[in-house]
Amino acid sequence: MNSPFKLAHFTLVSALLLASWGTLATAAQPAKGKPATEAKTETAAAPAAQPQAAIAGSEANPFNRLMRVAPKRHLPPDKDGIHDPANDGTQMLQTPLESFGGLPKSQGDFGNGVDWVKALDGGKINPRWDRNDPKAKPVLMDLNIVREVKGSMPGVGFPHKQHTQWLDCSNCHPAIFLPQKGANQISMAAIMLGQKCGVCHGTVAFPVAECRRCHDKAKPVAAKTEAK
Amino acid sequence: MPSLIRRTLIGRMLFVGTLVLATAFVDTRPAMAEYGDVIMNNNSDAAGMRPAVFPHWFHRVRYSCKVCHADLGFKFKAGGNNIDMLKIMDGQYCGACHNGTIAWSVENCNLCHSGKPGTPTQVHESKSHELLNPAKPPVGKK
Image (spheres, rainbow over the protein chains, first blue to last red):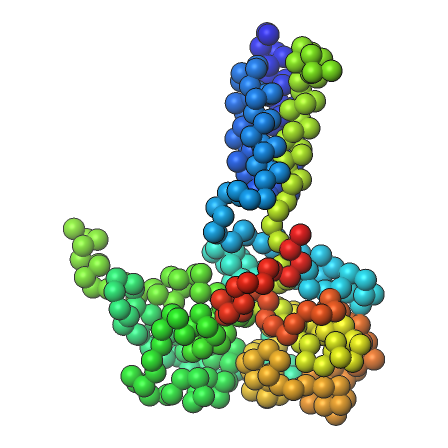
């Protein structure tokens, strides 16, 4: 086969790939690399079809069986799995992406995929502090609490400032955290079960998957070895 | 037909193209509600209403957490507030804003009561829910 035809072949496949880029699923990802090689070798097209079909059709042997498949994100209410599409009100609700379009993205696209603190600091959103008074301002408290943690994990720097932008003291103290140094036993297990920080983080505030947003205080020992 | 696909360039191009398109549209990921969406179904199913869905993301754009969780007394617990329509009409909980003055009023039943019937009370995509209910497949999984 002469090269202009090969080129045309390759271009078509690439165009198709690009066109379908937005809807590509994780399940389909292994297929991404294949068409490129198919375009190079003439006989590869038919054999490559076999494993693809097998993977797509297999329920028993999916790739990464024990890892949760990433869900489709930020779907409009009628497609999000919890709203009833048959309900007329569902169609009137705002869609998440409509709202998140202008907001800063969080690093890992966890949770809402929005960095809410940045959105607030950058003035992208202006949530009311009082439901009746649009001008009421929060009382900020700028006090960082550093918590040393076990093992090699960096310590946790807790900024009161970012929390008092959203919350009242009474939301956390004294029911969730005693306002006293050393009085609060916190563990990741408790957090993941919805206690302590986990009352909000992992439910509404950025999820625990974003480890380094809390564990951001590098340990002195770790810093030394890095320097060497 | 297979010989046509194999022999002609157009046939081969169409075959590969169809394959690529087919794999692109096979999407096995479960549909998930937005992070923090709360389903409230304490009384709805029994009353023949769809469960109420509370989108946290929509409200946090407009109000600080403090407004609801300190001023209005919402506990940090899905289904833990014993909200019913009487309290809402009385101006408590949702009714503090959903009164036709700050936000649309309670006549718009289907805007809140928009969940799939039978969905249990929970915070969607929450870590604790995922850990404490491992056997249940995500709602809306296809």
